[in-house]
Length: 291
Image 1 (cartoon, rainbow, N blue to C red):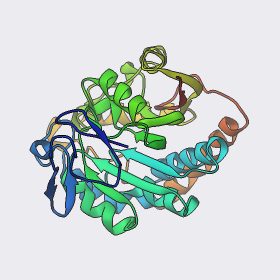
Image 2: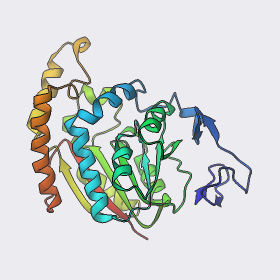
Image 3: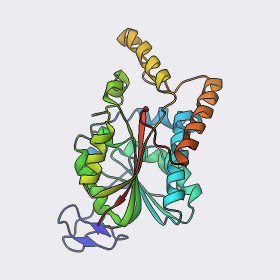
């Protein structure tokens, strides 16, 4: 079901125009735009980063491991997935994997920035893509699952986003999150990525349960590589500011990428058998809507 952002009226999801007040969302570059004023000038992300991500994601150990973790969660807890929304879909790398695993599902992707949607449209032409501010989601009880993968940390009012996700999920629908964690890991890379915060697990748990969710799984990942991650950031910090490379952690030799991917496969296997890792560069959350 759709929710009109102008009058808060509800109507059938396929329709664009609100039958109550007549409001029709704008269109930008061929995509429905629910927050057009933010489509190119919003805060929280450098849109120039989309092009680099599109080239690096598919071959990078971290992005591929995160995809495997997301797909495991969906196939385990929502094997008959019929409808899914990814908030902050960026270049569509995650949506592409979900489309292959769940060809029967109606996939939706949103991003605050219209620049990223063109990449996603090439990768996942069957997905319904839209420009949207996650603080104002124009749906109600519509999706079986909603994912936000390394998105929540960019948004100042994360509590509002979680409440909006709760409203947009169907009864007993699933929320899947990944976020960077541990404030003590903060570095210039977080500044470059326009992060508002890195999370502590307890703080994130409190916000999720307060929004009306029941936690099912919460675990760190990229745990075994945490010392290497800390060393990499320390070395970058020692360099003069002008010579720091914000994408250095993505540009690594192929042999090293293969080794790191193998290490994280072991970590992923541990998560799959039920181990929740206490520390790590990122945190994975699976929660269910509580009525």
